[in-house]
Amino acid sequence: MNITIHNAFLPHTDADAAIGFYRDLLGFEVRNDVGYENMRWITVGPVADSTSIVLHPPAADPGISDEERETIMTLVAKGVYGAVTLSTDDLEVLFERMEAAGADIVQEPTDQFYGVRDCAFRDPAGNLVRVNQA
Image 1 (tube, helix red, strand yellow):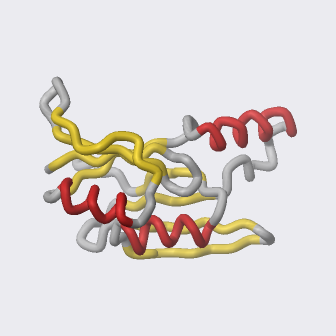
Image 2 (cartoon, helix red, strand yellow; image 1 turned 120 degrees about the vertical axis):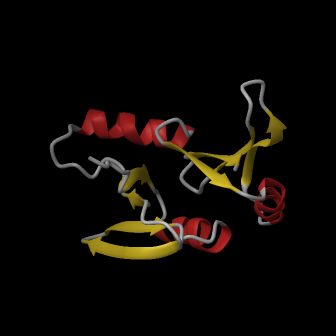
């Protein structure tokens, strides 16, 4: 039996900014862009891979209370609700591109004590995006 990751989910607070970040800065393709009322779900992913990230409106579940919705939105605003770790074959080039574009840099490329070289930044919704050198 073979199990793979198909989708991971991250919240977005601005669909157009999210597309600009994931498509234009990271080079992902937009695979789906679905709207319902005033909400959008955007599926993005690396061109040569079937794994996807679904960028979704946070707290859209009708089964949560107003208090729970407020808590979720507070966590999203603080940047502690969602995170993803990506991998690249050229960390320095990616970091320079993100820095030049004005991305919210959390950590410059660093050799970690646990054996990886990585950097980190936040997407437009505040999600932590960590990138390892492949």
